[in-house]
Length: 127
Image (cartoon, rainbow, N blue to C red; front, side, top):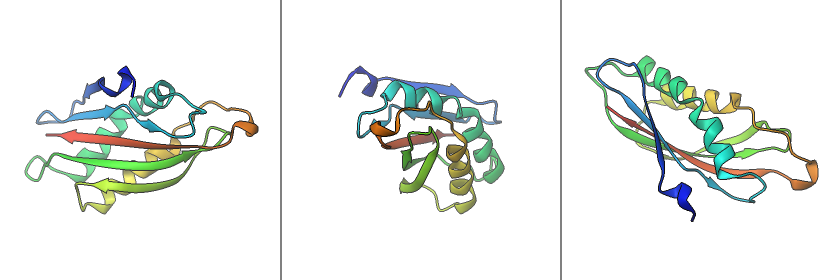
């Protein structure tokens, strides 16, 4: 566990009521991609994650929770096989929205010989 584990990147969205979205460092298996590469791409989608939240929760029913995904990054850079590992909400529309955003993330291409990479990534919503 390197220094990336203790760093949490924070981006506060412009959602009413002060929604904050945290994307802690990911767990990267197979090590053919770096934690920094994955975190940079996921962090770039933080405002999109906040938009999912604002579409599925109002200020009256706002809650704080964490969702943890496991997914595969293929050598082509495309995301595949998204699975919810942990969820703090039963709002299926919210989970579906987050999955759609993750599927749109484009990572760099790597040689086929390096194979796919499995990642676990948490997204934390604080209201």
